[in-house]
Image (tube, rainbow, N blue to C red; front, side, top):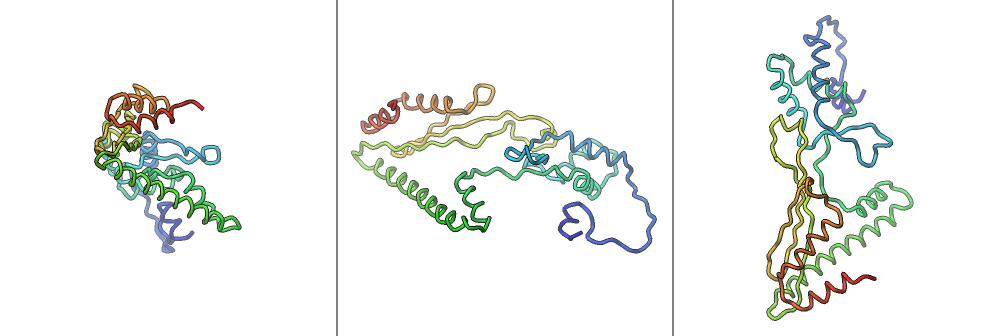
Length: 246
């Protein structure tokens, strides 16, 4: 077995050929206690590959060291070592992984990037499409910056708004071991920034109140538009055109 595969499996990368009859000081009950502890931690399945894979994922806030520390707090008299805990985790539960910290990505960039890495006849066309996509994204940022500057000029009737839904926030944001076994409350935050006044409004709610679908976002935006945050005329005409049914 290759060195990298041995390390991932929690084993050494070579077999000692010398005779050794020393038994492990840890029993099968110790091994079962570790597996029971790991299985008690909430996990989820892959979102896109659940039909083809049986892999499960733990929270990105966790790692083997933190799980071991939580185990030692539960079993104060246990003599298990971190090395043995890690070996059991790697060898006996190989399909349990730690999810990577989530980052917002563009589905177009991800799709074209996969096509480029495939290195086939479509890779060259995918590279061209990705370059065009990045150019359009940069142009959109430049337009937003230009409109923000225009809206801040004296006597301008242009009002520039930008809005974004923040990543889901989980409360309480605690990192002690007890939180590994509990479900946290999901909170949503929609921010709307006014470019000409450099003021922002935040709309915060939790999953017990409502979800984060199109109706909820539209309700936040409608309440903001009715709050009287600006008296500029061009903004009102643009909004009426956008909301006008086709």
